[in-house]
Amino acid sequence: MVFKNRPPKILIVEDDYTNHPLFLEAYKNAGFEVLIVDNADGDFIQTVTNFKPDVISIDLMIGKFGQPADRDGFEAIELLKSDDRTFKIPVVVVSSFFQKERVLRAKELGVRDYINLQNQSISKIAELFKSLVKNPRRYKSTHPLL
Image 1: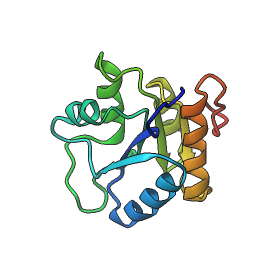
Image 2: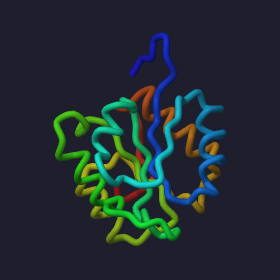
Image 3: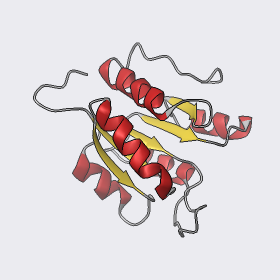
Image 4: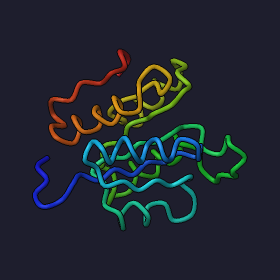
């Protein structure tokens, strides 16, 4: 994708508030316009279509930090992939949970990558996202099962 007259946009779905400033700084430093939401509840599709992200980063375990959640990350991905307005937006899972079953389910849902938050610096993750939006066809998943 070529971005003329605007930075690429990323929507981050992350319920851990302690990560919000870290993500915001890293992605802004990588050149992104950033919107962080703590869940995928309510009219999540409307949030997505209003912001028009070029890529979505999503945590699978939404609601684990004491915040009630109507949808977990898998349900949010299913919703995104089932809507004509959002199904083409690349989705990348960024999670601390790396069980094979979760990775395979995410793959079935069509995610572009499954990044282990514990094994990568946030600035490195932001650069991976930048690589994905700049050249989606050449992007290689960091996870061997994808």
